[in-house]
Image: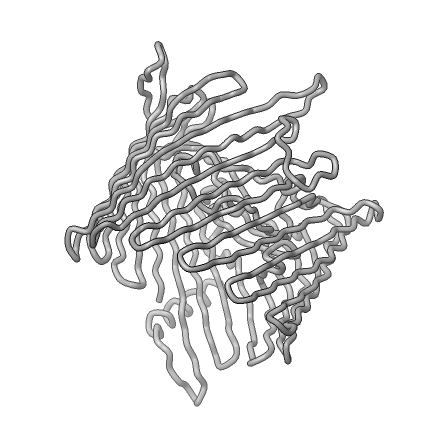
Length: 509
């Protein structure tokens, strides 16, 4: 009853206090955000299709009083997108109190942070992937002279509010002369069902000189059960740019123990392309953090009304102690090449030509040797955008991709087409259709293919996005959604095909 009354009180205060005010010489501000997600339709699995619906609502509340911040988030699920678990109205899943001064901050409650670009330590919440490695405890940060320091002690909770991970750590960095930063950390992960005691130590180094920058991070995990056995990770990136050009290089070498199944207080860089084409992105690379070595190079060019991107990526499992990726089938190699050329010939016009290729091999060991799931993909596409007036824009995206299932020597095609109308300043209407001749695809609508007796699938959909104001946004999806892997930062989950309506609403106040 107390929590329900508190919620009602907070809502009333939010409605009448969406601006900063001053009470008794104190500076007080109240802000918040509400995100609602609703879906109704059917979700197609490999064997059956049934009715499917969820409703999620996340209400965030911030109260700032001088140097103090009070944060509260209520997660309301009836049920959630990922399970039949129904959380009640009193489900306050995130909360903290924080004090911040010029050079000092202390937080009690839920916290997230990233050290060493996530390699040394990193806990995140990705609601779209149902991942939450946040900790609840105490987090302290401080800066003095040219030093930055942080320390924490916290526990990770599951959906039943039971502790599944406890950890503590410290971090210290120092800005050295000549734009050099050197940092180090020590993290201790307590024993639990997922792993024994782990002592993690790491270093990071960054350097900048004019148009050149370099960053690197290294960590090592020592397991309590086997002090001789170490699991390590190394990541490095470098950029250099000039007039009209830029070059990015990345390298990774991972043998991370805590990524053999569960994401556990680490969110390391992936060294894979950030974005390519829709059809290629529909088949993302699953990063093997527990055994992964690879690199990426990206060249960007610009001249007058021309822009170009050339990206090459290669990775694999380790071959013995090799520091470079292998092309051997048993090492699950991956390679990709992506080219994009963009031109703005006239005011309001934009042409984009895209082409990409990748080879993705997943090798599975068996008692008799093993087998591979081996795909080769080549795609080409074009984007055209035109502004007809200050009030109306149109954008089209057309792509086609040939897929070779090399393991069974089977080739097929995939196509994608979308049209978006942008009514300035706040309405976007998008219609799209995606088609595949892959006989293993599920969901969508059936269609005939060029192969004799062949049958494929296609997924038509409509989407509307409306910004009713700077504080209120609505997105409505209607139609068929293709299933498959959905990945963010190397973390993936499987999504079944969906047919129906989805509504997302975000309001800030």
